[in-house]
Length: 103
Image (cartoon, rainbow, N blue to C red):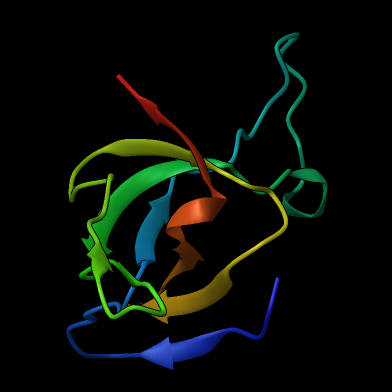
C-alpha cells in the first residue's frame, strides 16, 4: 500500500473514494497458535466510515455511490492508501476496489 499519512480532522472523500476502517487482524490461527504482529495478514474487510459524492463521467454526469456509511465491505488486498485517523490505520480506496458488501 502507499505511504501512511497522519490525519487529525474530519475526512470527506472526493469523487468515488471510500474511507474504510479495517477490522482487526486475527491474532491466532484456527488451531490456537498465537501470531506475532509481523505474521498477521492485513484484513480485507472493514466498515465504511465516509464516502465521496460519486464518479464524474467525461460528460459531467455524476455516477452515484453504491456503498454507504456503516456498511461492512470486502476490498482488494493490494490497493488504496493507508492513512492514520486518531492514531488508527484506516484505508482510502476507490469504489471499484470494493469487491463486496457483507451482510
